Length: 165
Ligand SMILES: [Ca+2]
Image 1 (cartoon, helix red, strand yellow):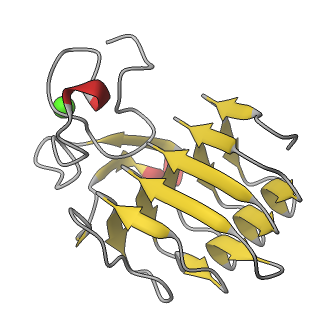
Image 2: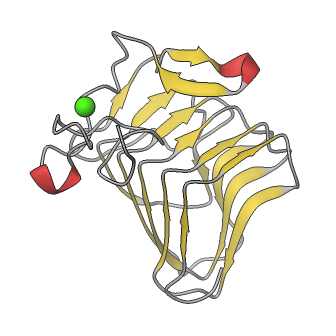
């Protein structure tokens, strides 16, 4: 990804080696993306600054996020990390993320929590949330992040203001 680039609204399942690769990039943004079944890593960093908001990481081969080098500044918020590791070789600034079966970084910020996100049908690639999911109305409570229906932010790729209801 290039400096200041935004990757938004993509679903990348069972593809490639890295879902996206951010190398020597400043101020990259990824939001409302689904990354699942990727052989290595959903999002790979190499000396990069980036913000990840409202993404869903399903089960990936190695981890949701990995870093190939130090010197990263990564902020994660309102994301769901489900299985296959969350972040390896990387210490993101974290808030309002949901972690499930994550073997590396499991969140240490305000609003971070653990639990089964209750996807509709992950095996079939449907990463929307079932009623009762702990990710519903559990993202950042600032109205700037509200869902398009006006309710509090739902964690994951289908929450936040960017998508139509
Ligand atoms: Ca909501």
